[in-house]
Image (cartoon, rainbow, N blue to C red; front, side, top):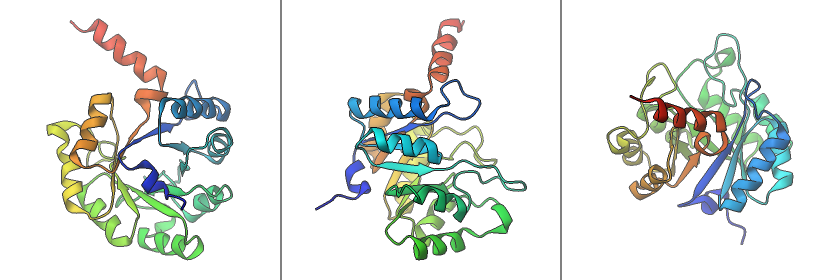
Length: 231
């Protein structure tokens, strides 16, 4: 029996291999090699942005991929897989799971999240959906809408949560989400150390996603420099 991606990642690490246009490692080839390194290191899955990167990664590793497309739309703060168009583009590659912004922010064209989920379910019934949320209310709404899992991805990155860190108060926000929804919760966002990742899983997270701490050397370098230069 083939395991679903949720079964494959349970209790394990997902590595986010992403580099935006203005970052030094922006390249589908480089991201595919990052994914190979993550696979060799024991990752259970890869999270990746853009059709080009997802395609290159799926050709390079045997791991399942959580696909996203980051795209800006005028008049909208939602940029992670904002519309059905991005879903359609990713589904030319048929990743087993796609993540999308499930915040309460205004969506492109005033599209409602519930309508988008309904459209995706009708068109791609076998696709698993991950809800990227920032607040407990958003997590609960995503669960009600039938998302297959909820990720804390955007906590600390939206206007309502800016400055918050997932690890604050022994991962208080993660614990609130775990208590508030009955779908798998994936810990993601500023998980910077192996110890933090292990703590997320110990608290009950279904899986943990780590990105910058593994795949963005400029961020890793900044942390070292900040520690060295600290008074």
